[in-house]
Image (cartoon, rainbow, N blue to C red; front, top):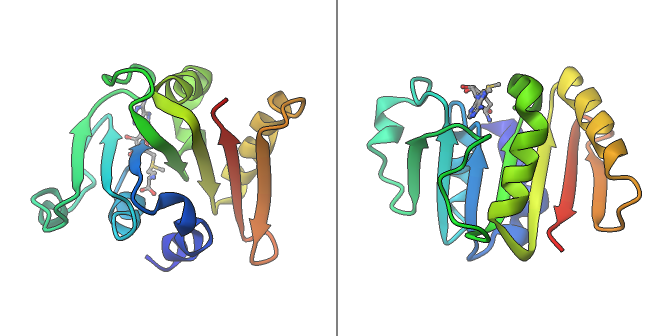
Length: 157
Ligand SMILES: C[S@@+](CC[C@H](N)C(=O)[O-])C[C@H]1O[C@@H](n2cnc3c(N)ncnc32)[C@H](O)[C@@H]1O
């Protein structure tokens, strides 16, 4: 969990006491580590097979995992303070724009959509996505560890 811990070290102020949704949570690392700071975390993925049984029946009282399509979130509008996507953009394929639309919908005004990546392909894809938002003043993107990690924050207006 070194990589995800490094990223969360950077953004943990945004998570404190917040309700967090992680889309495409995969093996659940981001959800589990962010739960140290957040009020509650819901991790969703098309399949929860990658999550270790121990973590599914987790001892983390404020984390829940659900099987769900990130492009069709079963949550009300403005339900979460933070919606997050960690190392999954490339895996969302053509659904990516719909996923971002859904993340926008379920994020409260003044909350944040957070995209984080550590893989080369992911970073390239994130940069492309951010070009779509470049006219938008509510976007902040930065590198940590000389570009080894990339983070983009989009404030929900
Ligand atoms: C690279 S993997 C895992 C990323 C995860 N954040 C991690 O660090 O383990 C990408 C994940 O995206 C999930 N995924 C792909 N399309 C999805 C969709 N439409 N809705 C939800 N999850 C999806 C896959 O099931 C897979 O677990």
